[in-house]
Length: 146
Image 1 (cartoon, helix red, strand yellow):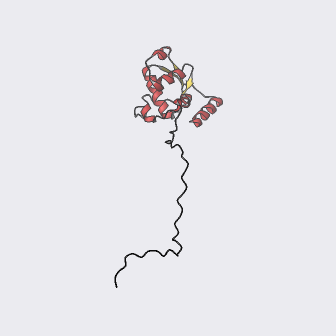
Image 2: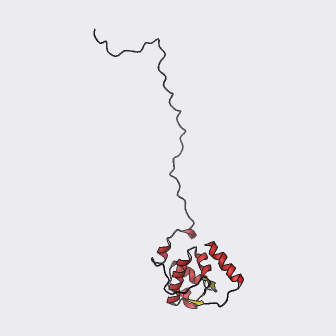
Image 3: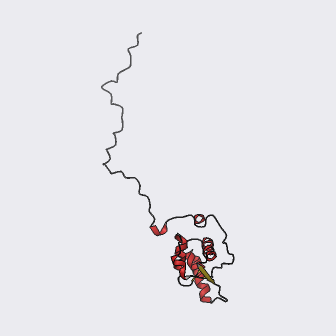
């Protein structure tokens, strides 16, 4: 017998079911996902960049409660970024913990930056004898805010 070729479907049979194509989606303007922008005040900078990779202050003995005040000529000095901000904050006596909270950087980073400014003569430090309970609570609250 000879091969008649491919068998054609019988027209009397129910055709094989095929799913209907999905309806076309409405044209939606495709935009790339928007990047989350931080406000300028909260730019992310790694702490080791602020200190040049140093983890220990040049001057040892800077305590959390050490009071700092800027020298009169410090504002006119050619200081950069965080150093300028520290000098601005210390125009009135300010503790190291308060400076850390205002800069929103870790306490260790603040100690390194403050020690540099003390060494360069832009800041003065005033050690206090006994601390009042109110001052200790204030320092505790500021450190917790970090």
